[in-house]
Amino acid sequence: MSGKQTTLAGESLFRGIALHTGSRAILRMKPAPADAGIIFKRIDLPAAPEVKAFAGNVVDVRRGTTIACGAGKVYTVEHVLSAFHALGVDNAFVEMDGPEPPIADGSAEPYVKMVREAGIRELDAELKYWVVKEPAVVEDGGTRIEIHPYDGLKISCKVAFGGSPLDSQEFSEEITGEYFATQIAPARTFCLYKELEQLIRMGLVKGGSLDNAAVIHDGAIICKEELRFPTELVRHKVLDIIGDLFLVGRRVKGHVMAVKPGHPANVMLAKKILEQKQGD
Ligand SMILES: [Zn+2]
Image 1 (cartoon, rainbow, N blue to C red):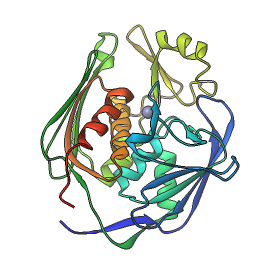
Image 2: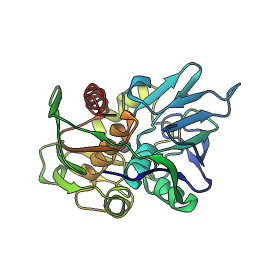
Image 3: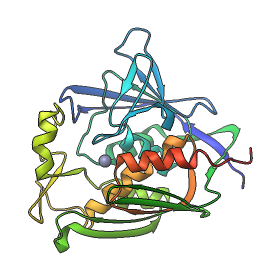
Image 4: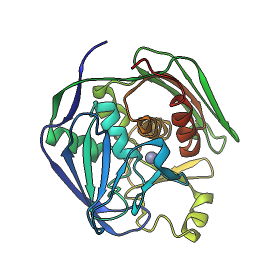
C-alpha cells in the first residue's frame, strides 16, 4: 500500500451565508505541508488561531460538528471535511473570517468545486490511511454505527424519520472521489419540522431557509427545488459520516454500517477507531 500524501495545488475562495449565525462568511482553501492535516484558521481573530480537524478537538455535536482549540472555534466543519476526505486531500489550510463556513445550498458541492478549482498535488511524503483493524460499534439511543475492516471506504446507511415510505431510505456504496462528487456531494442538509422550533430557541439556524435545507414534515419532504435524488436524505447522512470520520486525521479504510446516524455517534465512532493501534 503506497502512495503519496496530497495537498491543494493552489488556492480557492468561496463566499456565502453561515447556517447557524446567519452572518456573511468567506472561506479560503490553501495548500499545507505534509502531515499538517486539515487546519482551520480564524483570520478574523487576534493572532489568527488554528484548530486542527481532529476528534480530540470536538467540543459540540448538536446539529453540526464544532471544533475548538484555545481561542479558535469553528462550527459546522463536516461538509468541508467530507469533500477533502472523499476527494483525497490530506493536508490543507481552511481560512475563515468568522466561526462558520458558508452553508451555500446545504450540500458539499461548493467545496468539491473549490478543491477542483485549486487542484490537487502530491507531496513528497508517504500516504498513511487509518486502517480499521477490527470491528467497532457505537450506540446512542436509536442510533447504531458499526465499522468493519475493508480495503477502501464503503458506507451502508439506513434512515427512518416519520415512518412514511418517502423518508425511510437505504444506501450502500463504495465511496470513490468521482462517486462522491456526483452522487453524494449534491445531497442537501435537511431537518425535521418538529426540531425547527427548538433550534430557533437555541439561537441556531439563523441563516437557514429553504435555499439551503429541506424540511421533513408529516412524512412529506418540503423543499424549494425537486429532490436531487429520491434518496437525498440518506445520501446527506452519508456525506456527514464521511466528513466526521476524517476527524481521525487520515483517510479511513473501513466499511461503515449505520442506522439513523448523527454527529454525536459519528464523532464517537471516530474516537473509538482512534484507539486502534496503527502499524506506523
Ligand atoms: Zn450535514
